[in-house]
Length: 164
Image (tube, rainbow, N blue to C red; front, side):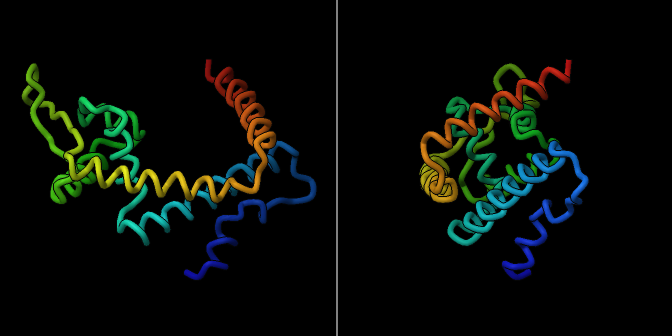
């Protein structure tokens, strides 16, 4: 797929009709921006580190929990099935990036931690990931960043209130 086709595919706003409600317009703009950023991050991780976004996310969760996480905790934090987590864990373990060891109180449960090699690899990827995100959002001023964050927090509160 060429870059132009990817942009068109990711641009959900192209579906808009003149009579669409402003909330639909906003939703599609948010979705388009999110998809464009995610697609670029996926491509950069693949090109520069020969890895995937789910593998990066898996390692990010472990980096935030130096004492390790169970497979169930990883599944919950990543919001994916246990099968998805197991597949990623098998790959990362095979590359020597994670360790899996039985939990002392429950030998059927595995605790997953980054190895020294995994911590170094993740640190390199995380630094690059941060640069890429800063680059993609770098055309916004500090005031614009804060304004968007404030508005998105308000939106998040409104959506959360609907869940109760």
